[in-house]
Image 1 (cartoon, rainbow, N blue to C red):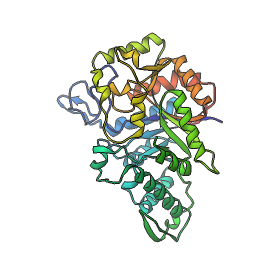
Image 2 (image 1 turned 45 degrees about the vertical axis):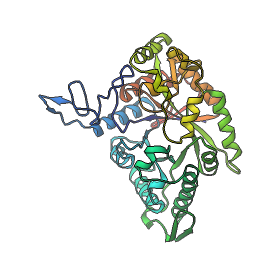
Image 3 (image 1 turned 30 degrees about the vertical axis):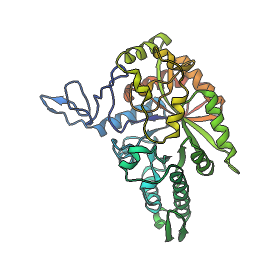
Image 4 (image 1 turned 180 degrees about the horizontal axis):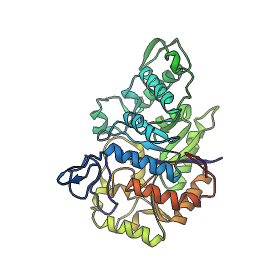
Length: 378
């Protein structure tokens, strides 16, 4: 079966490289010479906005062979629903994986909004269901629901969305939601239901994923515990055959030495004590920290198995683990994950635009399995 490979589209600006953690793309950073989206021309903004840059990333990754793009959602990002609606017209068959927290939308509104977007894009919407990392970020949204209850709410949310989608009148009286006689307008009935990529590493998340996920989505971890987590999802997927996806940052170069040299340059500008920082009640983040033990004396101490490096969060925001190596090494590690049962990836690189073209040109063609692209099978 072909593997689906998505590319991450930054919705909150970008860095020029991993060498320095300085944003130079997007309005989130001060507008200065050398920056883009927007840049400066004769001291004035050049009219090229960050949405234009996101469109460039979407078009480039579609051209490079990615089947679609993940649009992440955080307090400091653009809204991924609005971004998907805007970017869809810039691409042809490219899918948009919209990250959202179900607790912040009513499920009937989410169903109508999704069906409208499916109709407008020809069925290119994919869900990335996240239930929040807790801590200050969760309170930023005004959400005080406890960790395990958030997953119970997510599961009920999806029950209601699916009930409304199946045709009205649909009624539901549950713990978090109550609707009576709900349904989609006639012209929106019959749209394909979005594929669900479900994130979360806690037992509560895995139980909910077993019930709803088309793809259980995990950050990259050392391969052995990752395989154990997949087994837990399978155990909770009674009557269903779950599929698995992994979100991975990639730093691939022609040679292994060149790839690690990029890490070395970035490492020279970070304080390793940041490794100890953590907020919120995210089990995934706590798991990531647990895989790095012992005293850290250099960047290679964070390589927990060949080419699997746990220091990306020190060079840019986001998860810790990613792949570092030559094009062939990175492709080989992806093949190993496919052998573990992974059949979809969300890859990422900094800067997103240039690295999409690099990974698409030099890594994807080396995979041993067929890859679903926006234009067919590679």
